Length: 501
Image 1 (cartoon, rainbow, N blue to C red):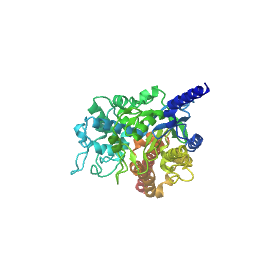
Image 2 (cartoon, one colour):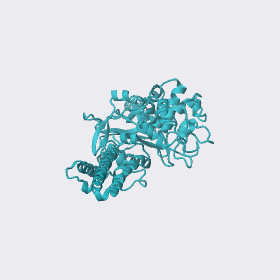
Image 3 (spheres, rainbow, N blue to C red):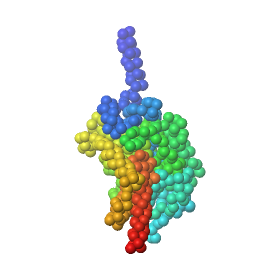
């Protein structure tokens, strides 16, 4: 009897172990959650990030999901399901959609773009070949980075409307010869998706990418995202973090304005790391995902991904959001980091602290097993550039006030001008007219960003840089008019005196 009981107990244990075997063989890898928390909280302090969401994958499974900080001014907590604007992390999703259509035979990668967009007019080189769909995907079309920034502030509902208003973009080089990152490429790809599929870009992405990947908190329409809990974006205005909401053209969504939660983006990341498959759903073939991620010498970009030899990644910068998606296929680690701020000025001055934070978070998740040789001992931190900017603006404001005071003060007398008319005219021309005009014309070229885009990405300081030169020019014109009137009156007085003689 005792032997039968022992056998019965052993059988029960075997049944239980058999039932638990799949879970045991797929046990969640060890993730250093406390280290991730520490890096996330420190990064939020260093870079003034209101809200942050982190998702980590390892060996085909999600191993960490967490939100930090606030989603908006109500104090709503960031959750793994909170949508964020993705910025240019939208590009790999757009590229995946193009590859789907290619697999279905609905378009050809090496077909000229004008086959699908016959209205497209480019100011091309005389001996250049046609720009192809592959060129757009690989950012080798010849379209410029500058023109890709111009369209961020352009008006128009569709890509055709935007490009008609902006005029024909000029190719800066032969298609296929050189990498030039440009939002224009992916705006056009979004329009090709609409032309080929017969659906709107939003409808196609939601049906063929979001739905099969179970991305239930993702939106191809920013308005729909706002209605469903989108984290508010924040920008620094004269050093103060403020909630902002720039308008977004639907034509720009394929290049930088899809919205998704960190939980959903781990689904997309897993599909890219697993040959186009997520759970039992295949959205792309392994051949297509491999083509998207292929690294070729001289070209740092595959099709929607930056393809450094060690890491495949993409960062995203909208006006008031930043995101990073990073995957290491050799180790099986990957990470998604979303945040609801983007200080374009400070990241330009001090370097990509946001990207550094994302690498540190992945290093923390792996318990220090990755990238220790690539990281500096101390993270990049934002310095006091904002204080200096505000001080410079204060000096310019005082200069303007003093200049206005000089124009209207009662002590202004003709004798102050008499011996120095010529020199004063030169000084006024240089300081108040020529200098501001040159600044307004050349500054956008020097930083590679047009004024309209600068105002969207650097509000406050950007507006000051635009308005102050205009005010100086107005004062300069008033000074020149006043100088001319005094010189003319003195000339007349001298003529009367000579007549009396």
